[in-house]
Length: 373
Ligand code: F6P
Image (cartoon, rainbow, N blue to C red; front, side, top):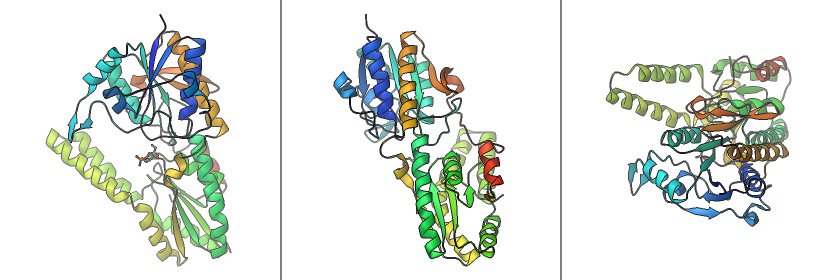
């Protein structure tokens, strides 16, 4: 009897998802003789049993395409909005799994997807995940696909901003994505030769940033490029958020915990515009005309880099091989040139942030990059 395998993509899309679907699909169907079915729009499609056949013609011509042929969403099975109400739909997922006579479900996603997959494993399903995200913040894997492409796009943007910054003698602040991790800003900032790099892992002092820019002006440099991760924070903001987090950890009642979660949400809501404020403050403090470029979803769009196509293909084919051997309950992680199955319990709810002594940071400091600390 061939094995029946389901696949879904969940969370924010990224380049390489189609390459991974193709890698899984070709190896699973043609080499291991498995049956495949895709679920549309992440976990929502699984709840509503909305499927897409993944025959060989669907797997052709998609290697180089961005996005995902399956569609995606940020829905979670245990807290899903259904008809204006938040409901636990885990039972519906189990029914879909049984109705389709699945032997395993592959969930391709980022940090949130790993948590959802672990819950489904605990509900008795055979689940395997693949790590994808432009943020590169998934625990226990060297790298996730999507990151290299986003890094290339952000670096090219910084390259291009140099010529306009120098023509106008301006400061240009460029905001990258990355959620609460600084990998993208650090990588693109260093590769693109940004003068200042601000990341969440190193809270910054505004005066230090302004002084680094004034120093450049005194040395006759006509412009400055400031690469900022969307999650970067000043020392004061970091203190505020850490205090709320500490109180939340020590909360004595559900009510107190809920209030603190609300405070945290309000903080992050306010923080969304921090690069706008940073840009205005730097203009005031340096007297130099300053502009802001927010790269946003551009970093997630379009064709994957060669590296991401290779990585997604490698992860996809390894996934099919491991499923054929009966492995489940794991994320297929990247380890050096190979892959390694890691129990979902070791991945879910954890984040891979940039360690303060990481070689990328040391090297950036040695070429004179200011981190605002
Ligand atoms: O996780 C990928 C990511 O692009 C983050 O860098 C960013 O914070 C978030 O998704 C944006 O999410 P959305 O596409 O839902 O606005």
